[in-house]
Length: 163
Image (cartoon, rainbow, N blue to C red; front, side, top):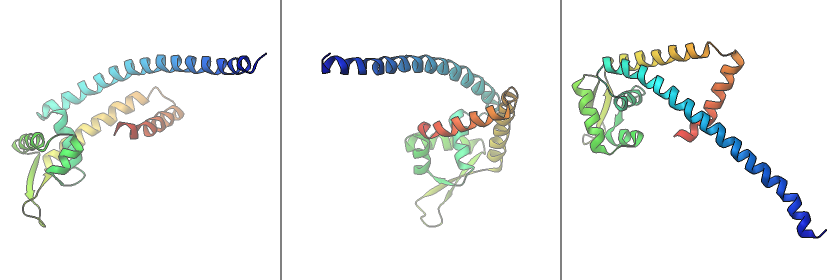
């Protein structure tokens, strides 16, 4: 047997295993894509009901969530949201009209405005978050404690890839 035959015979099983793993991974990824789509639809429908009561869109809700952690400048909001400052201005204008947020001048630089969340905005964020937690608790009702921990660890592990 030549060296070429030996190398080919050695590498072939590894290549076959890689292809098999890739195929298996693809099948799993397709199943996960279907599950994510279904779960996301369910969450968004429930979320939309709650947001609809407050006349707030999903991007506005996300912005209120950011603001609930503290005041932000327009530039900071645009960066977090992945929007232009012009689009951010529109979001803030609508939240101001709904009395869910407001602009205040920065104490250190009068050219800069900070956007703050109102008490109504805080209440909306808390209601929606509580609704999400309640829905997750219902889902977790079919899992063992160990499965809940595993689910959490997996999501914590992949979360950095979503940012």
